[in-house]
Length: 122
Image (cartoon, rainbow, N blue to C red; front, side, top):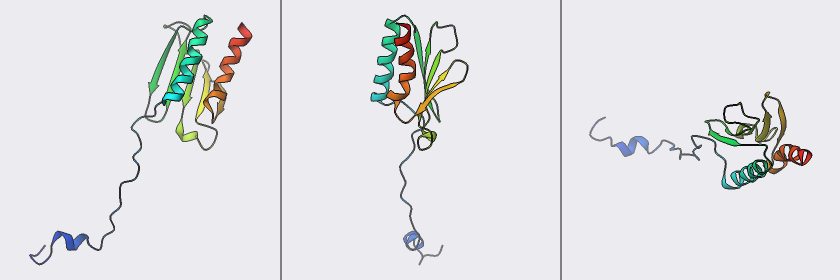
């Protein structure tokens, strides 16, 4: 670079891209989703069906796992996967065997598959 060239003259013709919306590092449940999940969890604990839960925030999905006993595998995993939001729905309920019981766009509707089991047991 010579003395006549300044750093501004080099970037004057260049297109500067503004940073777009940054993706969060991990997928999380928002306040409304956590409220729905914990309300269901509370009802199932009161019925004596569930005893423990775990929340996992991963890079590509978030999971709410429920357990009958702490030392077992989870009975159900409620998974939020934003990559599937436009196709099958971001939310799914997965049984302990890995079978997807329900998938959809609305968390309350997806959770009904587990809530129905509570009403059948009662």
